[in-house]
Image 1 (cartoon, one colour):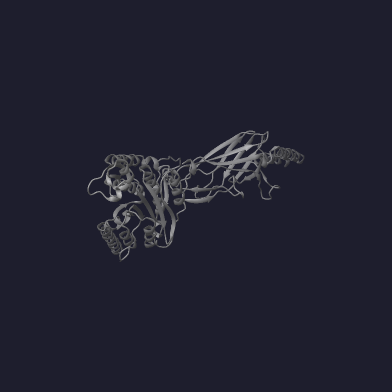
Image 2 (cartoon, one colour):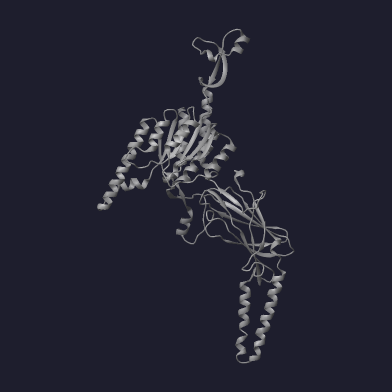
Length: 492
């Protein structure tokens, strides 16, 4: 989405050093090598003391060259740096950042840049080298992989540039600021849940949703909904409220209105942001190739550490794209101890943009989520029958989990799809043959937890709740598949 790309930020460079303008420069490695060469003149001075003047002359000549090279360097305020995001920052997705340096002076510079991005965008900043020509933009592009959602302030761009002799270099700093703000502030970016990469994976689901919608339109189910379809002659048994009195007056006989099934359904995505949503795991990036020294380093760069909530927000974005393409309306509620984010049902690109913005601000909480409060709010928000896709986790407890009570309360009026995350490591622990007493206790505890979980799921299914068990890596695909299944069977 082009609108989700941050605005470019520009800044003019300023001197920077230990004492500001006084020591805003340094010597290059070439200068140190030349000084060392001058020290070689001390060798003949041991035998002929007058030869020490050769070293002094060399050092004086080198010092003059350094001062001359430094004086020929342009002032820092002749340099302008612009930081531009070429892609929308998304969790775990490749995001290209372009730095443009422009020199307003008749010089050619050997420029080195260090972009101080936030830790959530990149680990160790890399130094970039550019050759800057007068009044031309020199461009450098880097690729980062954001590791957290939310708003982050970016740092400054640190500059070091050299002249023709390459004996001295100036130090400068530029802090890009976002334009059109009353008070200049450092550039801020918002990292969103993954949404662009999900286009390829949701293309099939969008096609299937459109096929289901076309089939429903061809069926033309009449007499059920309240969307007007056509007029026909009155027949015994028709409701009096459906009589069109204006058409009756024109035709001189009773005429009845026909209605079709309401095609636009409302689908809510409810996200649990409580304690268990902080659970972290690793996902493997599957599209990018990384260059590294060893196979272990390449493998580690392919891995992305995300939380359970990160995957839930990505799944909600993926599901919203399919719902929007199928003609239904989607809403969202994220809750912890209270309601964090709330988006009433709607559709269209603008509504999808609002959803992605809110999901990027959703945060995990340290306390257990209050599902009953979320149910009470949902009952007030959604009066007519709708579909609620609830992404949560079953808390292991001796009694009936709160989420089961909440789902049973909503299923009386709405179609509930409960997407619960399972943990393969728990099943592996329960199936493992114990080799000692400790492993026996661990295995027995895992078996008991799984048994309580199965019983809770069975009770919810008997009450009419549709339960989808999935891993965090497949949560988006399974949620979309269940939505399409509900659409195809006409359960709404």
